[in-house]
Image (cartoon, rainbow, N blue to C red; front, top):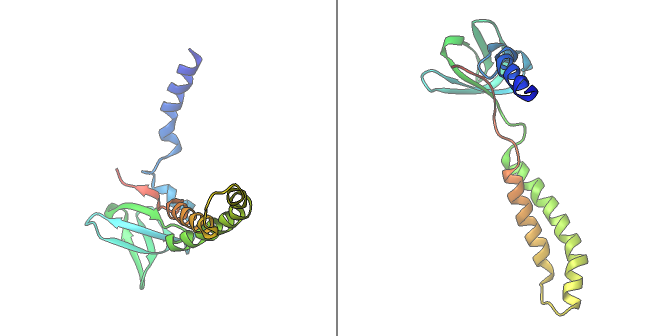
Length: 147
């Protein structure tokens, strides 16, 4: 019975903690953060966060712009690193892991009569690392969404 009461209490108090539809979530942004705003006419504007008030949000994008709250559909924070940079880091880590596997497991396989080319472990590690780097994190994070 207690778990049910806890879940009911949690469900009733969750709106008090604010969700994506709380305009005050913009207080978590710092001036200069990379953000994007989707407006009610589906136009997207991206730039640096300048500030917000109860009725508007300001963004610096090829000049300063202030957008009224009633025109804002969604505010999101841009990813900190670009996908190409994550791919390069993943490939570098994959090459290092491939080199280690080549010198340990690859040597053992070659001693046992397996014909595994020496570069196969390194190339495979680079490919897997690049793929994981491309998939890892970096998505936009929604700060505010109008209901």
